[in-house]
Image 1 (cartoon, one colour):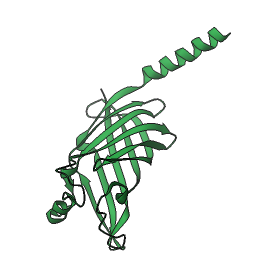
Image 2 (cartoon, helix red, strand yellow):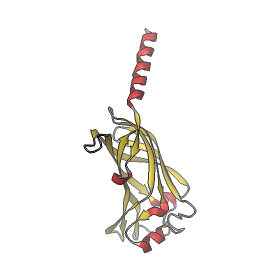
Image 3 (cartoon, helix red, strand yellow):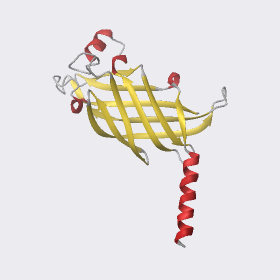
Image 4 (tube, helix red, strand yellow):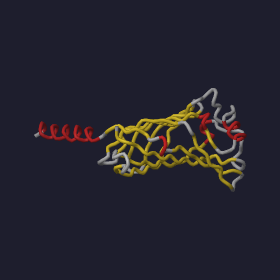
Length: 185
């Protein structure tokens, strides 16, 4: 009986792994964005133009088995060059010293992903919301694809970002919004 249960468990695990597959991020239809309150009333929005990642997902169960992503901090884009220059300076991202930000997922449970975020050389655990849609078929390319939306918050001061700016000038909490369109390899 134990042998039969072990065999069934092994087959289930192998079948589940056979369903999972790596996907490629479609950079033209994906984004890594954020918004943060400025002077307690308005919001400043932005994103990173240069980012990359790897994802392995089971299209049948929509379970993300692995997800790693990185942004090039100097590619920050807020539609204001003066602000971007300041955000790349030592008191914010210090992009010359810390050129990349990284996220490595450790677990996907329900509508949450858990992982480690590294900015300015500081690594902290984060928990973000995730919505996985698909799979679908792109009518133009006939390729299987999925859409993933990741949202959450990061306390900028946890990563020594803009620590000289008080919460009245710039909110400590930064909203994260990541949109990924991914295609089966």
